[in-house]
Length: 90
Image (cartoon, rainbow, N blue to C red; front, top):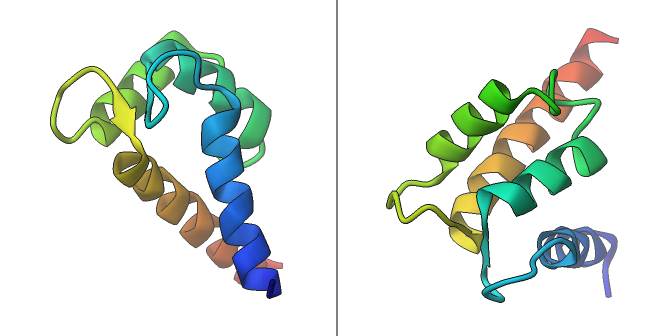
């Protein structure tokens, strides 16, 4: 497996690491667990309820009160872009 493929598999594994209900979706509570654990250095105030609600609403494109993997990829892309931008500031 290439390095990129390992990283991609890691993203899938992180998504699955917090789910307790449906296999391919995260609830708001599950997303609340994931953000401070995995993106504490990228997203400020990951423990703030209003911040979590805003992120969840932004990700939940179909407004079904769940974040599916496709919606989660949006968050991953935003975090990846922020990490890329940060490397150019140093």
